Structures are given as C-alpha cells and as structure tokens.
Length: 568
Ligand SMILES: CC(=O)N[C@H]1[C@@H](OP(=O)(O)O)O[C@H](CO)[C@@H](O)[C@@H]1O
Ligand SMILES: [Mg+2]
Image 1 (spheres, helix red, strand yellow):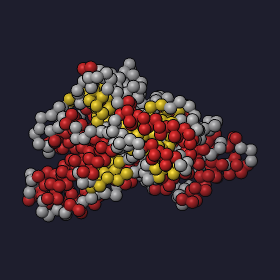
Image 2 (cartoon, helix red, strand yellow):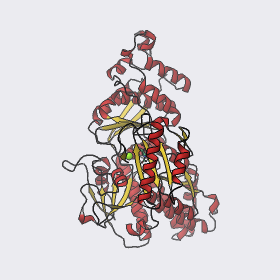
Image 3 (cartoon, rainbow, N blue to C red):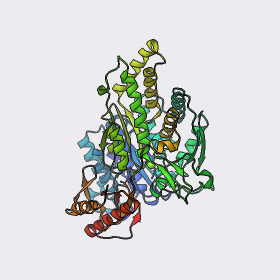
Image 4 (cartoon, rainbow, N blue to C red):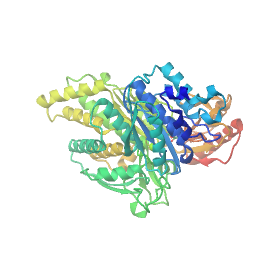
C-alpha cells in the first residue's frame, strides 16, 4: 500500500473500473470502440492516457466519447492531440497495453499487483514525461448524445483525476470536430468556446457568399441529422446563418427515431438509400446527411425509383473543393507579384475506397493525388505536406489543410492588394482562400463546416446539386464484410491495396480481378469492426458484385469462414 500512496497514479481508482472478461481493446482507426456497457475501464484508462499526453506535450489535449456512425448501444473514446489532430500513432501501442493491463485484483503476486501503475511508470520513464513535479495537465472532454455517455464521462473524469495535477474540463455534448477545434484553438491562444465556433462558421460563410458572383441557386437544403449531435448543432447554427434555407430532419428529438438507425451519412453512403423521415416529397431535392458525431458529410438526391438516392459522396465533395481551390490559386498566381504556381503546392489525398472515376477526374485536372491508408490520421498527415492539402474519404470524412507559411504569405499579399488592386479577381481570390481557411476545420473533418463550404462553392459556381453530381460518373462498386476467425491475419501494404499476408491471397485476387473490365479489388482488416472489408469496382454493377463475392470466397478460403457475410 505504501508503494501505492507514493505514486501519483491512485490504484484505488483502477479497482473501481474492472476490466470486462475476455475482451481485448485496440486503439483502431478511430480510437477504442465497442459496446458502451463494457467500456468503463477503457475510458477510465484513456483518461490516464490523456493526462499523460497533456503532461508530455505541456498543452491541452481532448478526450471525445463517441462511436460515430455505430449503433446507439456502442460507444468509444479517442484522444485529440494539442494541434487538434488524432493522438500520435507512436502512443497507440502504449494505449493498447494500458487499457488491456490486467486488473490489480486478478493478480496474486505483490509485484504484479501494480501492473497498471508499473506500466505507466515505465512509459513515463521511456517518454521522459514530466510527472509528479508540480506540472499540470488539462483535458477537454466532449461526448455525443449516446445514453452511455454520462457514465463514461464519469469514468474519464476519474481516470484524469487519478493523475496528480490533471484537470478535466467538461465541454458538454459536442460534435467530434467541435472538440478538436477547441483543443487546437486553446493551444493557439485563439477564441475557443462553442459560440466562437458557431460565430466563426457563420461569419466565414457570409464572407464567402459575399465574395461570390450574384448567381441564383437552389438555396433549399434538407439535412438528415442522423438523430445525433450533428443535427442538434446544425439547428443551433441555423439561427445565426444567413443566406441559406436549411431544413433539418432526424434531429434526435423525442419521437424522431434512434441515433444512426436507418439514417445518417454512413447509412446513406453504404446503402445508397434515402434515410428515414425522407420521402416522395423530397425527390430531386438537394439533401445532405451527417453521421452520428458530425464529422462525416455526404450529399444525395432522392430519386423517384423506390428508396434509392443519387449519392454525392466524399469523393465528389473533394472534387468540388479541389476545383474551387485550384481556380482561386490560378487567379492568384496569374497576377504579377505573387509567387509562381509551382511555389504553391496543392495536393489531394484519397484512400483506396475512392471511386476510380474520381481519381481519374482529379488527375485529369492536373492535380497530384496521393493514396493513404484508411483512417483520417493517415490522410491528414499526407495532406499536411502541401501548402494546400485536401483530403476526403469516400464516406464523407475530410477537410482542407493550409500551411501556416502559405496563410501568412496570403495575408501579406492580400493586405498589399487591398491598397493597390482592391476588387481585382486576384485580390478576391486571396480573400476567398483566407476565408476558406477560417471556415473549414483544420483540426479534423467537420460535417458542419464542410456543408457550409459546399454551399458557398455551389453559390460561387452557380451550380445545382445535379450539375455538381454530373462532373463525372462513379464506376459501379460493391463493399462487403467477411467474418473471419482473426481479421488481423490479413496484413496489407501499398496503402492497403495489396495483401502481403496470408501469402498467396493477393495473387488469387489479382487473377480474379483481371477477368473484369475496369476491375479493381482489395481486402483489408477493418479498424473499427471485427471483419475483413472487401471492395470491388468494375464496369457494371453485376460485375462489381460478382468480383466482390469472389474476393469474399477467397478470404474465407485463406482465413476460415466465421459466420454470415454481410453487405457493408
Ligand atoms: C470503409 C470505411 O468507410 N471505413 C471507415 C471505418 O474504418 P474501418 O477501419 O474500415 O472500419 O471507420 C473509420 C472511422 O470512422 C473511417 O475513417 C473509415 O473510413
Ligand atoms: Mg464520425
């Protein structure tokens, strides 16, 4: 016991949150995720992790409780680094070790009694974390609308409080990107409250619309809020927005339905079906859908035939943004006095799930297209290597990053032009780019700021959703999930486009793919579900379906069938 008292991690707290039996948690694509009822010990320990991260960086970090598009009974926890991005990957193995460390009660030996604490002591030493020397740690806490969020919030607070000098600051119910935005702003010393966020979005949107030509456009937009926090926050934002006619459905109010059930961005994208609360009256309308924690956005047009939609996915949003940014850069660079085009690097980042037609279109525009593994932490890192980096997953998660160097250059140039060439196209382009950098969330993909930028660009172009959707036509594709005994037996390379383990599987996938015109197929273990995901693309829907089915069979053959397979 003396050992326990001397150390700034208090084991008594650890005992309050016993590990569930027979479960192993992994810090996957989006942090730890599982059934909400078994997550308390994980969240408690993630609180310790966040406190250590704050001590190590000497800055405020974030802890978000959400399971995004998963069913309402699930929950999850992820840590935001001081720059507002996802926690650095080098800490993930420690995160895994910490949340899976056996409970003190389950161990008989005295030395092992302190397993969790010893693990922390060792890590603190290795990482040189200033610990127990009077330093303080600050952690902003956010949660989505899940019912398990309240109890898990308490677990997170206890975890944080168990580290001497660490303070938990409860920011209430937020979208994931709001919390990341707050963390980033606090550390930059800029305004960081929720109302600052709302005001910033509304103001930049207004400025962008004022800088657009006087085009008439479809101003009405119907938004599916997934019965989650995104819908709630959009209702709030709507009150201070001007120039947009937004109608929010599936807001999560009593009687409107359950979180993510038959609605939300993931449902609309994967099922290509209209969400609940949408019907015949909406046929042909401009509609958008958010996911359960407000970090994904897709657009869609309900079609007259059955429940189908014309999906305008993350790839199309990326394409719209890329066209707009490229045009502004061209105006800017054509003007004498600004660095030539080569000096401003513009790049786009996609994953292997990006529809092949989108990649071909972007390349035809002359853009540099980089492929990254699934998960925004990978895309974000790649995008940050450009002056302007745009990244999007096909499912609608993405944003635009501007380098500090480019922004200060832009600001200086814009100040100069305001006295000599105010009102010139070049001046306006600079102002537009500066406004985009203020509107779009540079910490992480954000459905609300993404939606406002889409609307501002459509206004600028004078485009209807139909015109936007017709930029290119998606190749037919199919996603399937294969249930296998151990998904981690699949190891991939080349941004997940090639299987390296088990040996032989890739060769057979290649052989199968070669049978289909325009065929493309890859398999990878999911980071958020216990499945291997299969993706196939081909020139017809039947061909894409059949290629995906063949790939599932190959996965079964190599890894062993462990249950029924489902559509993604
Ligand atoms: C094919 C697909 O949509 N995968 C999603 C999904 O990851 P998986 O690792 O595929 O389960 O959830 C991630 C977190 O939301 C998201 O970043 C990613 O794009
Ligand atoms: Mg999400």
